Image 1 (tube, helix red, strand yellow):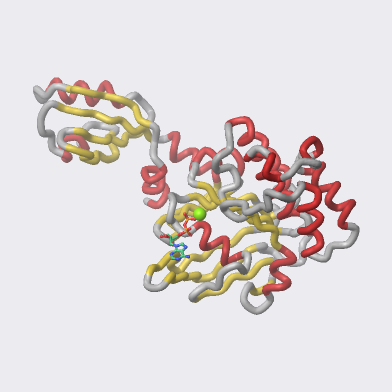
Image 2: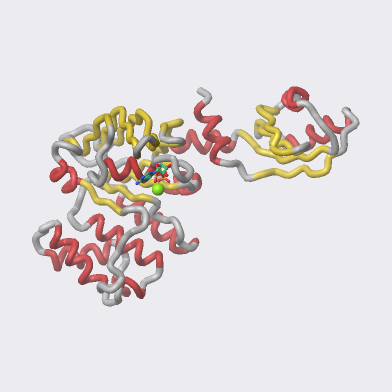
Length: 309
Ligand code: ADP
Ligand code: MG
């Protein structure tokens, strides 16, 4: 971890944000340490972009306090902007501009010295060498994201805020952008938002899960992985009505949710395949099983597991 004069890169204290009467963030608090890669994970509409816009001084909070590298976002926004690089959600780029020209333009906005050599450095750091003389509009989505990341890094900020940096990328591009982010994260504080759990597992040291404008979990990534590994989700359809209590009484079952008619989602510990036990249960009770499938676990189920403690 690099030497720094402050112990915490981002401090968010009791942040709430109202859009008219709608509460997008409700009393959110968390901290991010220097050189940490933190994932801000949550479904669409959770409040991720709103939080990131507040941290980057693009949107004022309704109440609460945020500081970045010791500077207050409301009172010292100029200093905060110097410390922060930001890749907004839809990566607004000037499609008619050439890659180099655009990065030089952004460098000029930041009034950085030696713009030309800094742009060259950024082009190398983000793997844009081959594409550097093209118009941005001619680039693939993956390369546009690289331009967005180069743009965010050009003034050598200490903190990088990336709003859904891999959304819309194909699997190869995804892999490349993730490793680029991990590389940057070796020396900078990175906060990225995503609605994909695997993204967090692949890139982040820590995960902050946000849902409906509130933080529901804040934990090391390996704890999240553990929670995912420790339970299974099975879809079962019976030919007639079965009580939830009876299903919950099957040994190993954590919870049963009725999704429609006689269809259930069963969440169970993952130390054995629960399907056999569900089948035995059905036989014993004279019920037929119409369908029995293992399901990919949804974010929400893991949310619950993580927030239980
Ligand atoms: P996320 O990035 O997690 O998808 P957002 O921060 O974009 O979530 O949005 C959080 C909530 O705030 C959503 O319900 C969204 O509809 C609402 N919202 C976002 N921006 C605005 C806005 N400019 N005006 C009104 N409501 C907004
Ligand atoms: Mg968003």
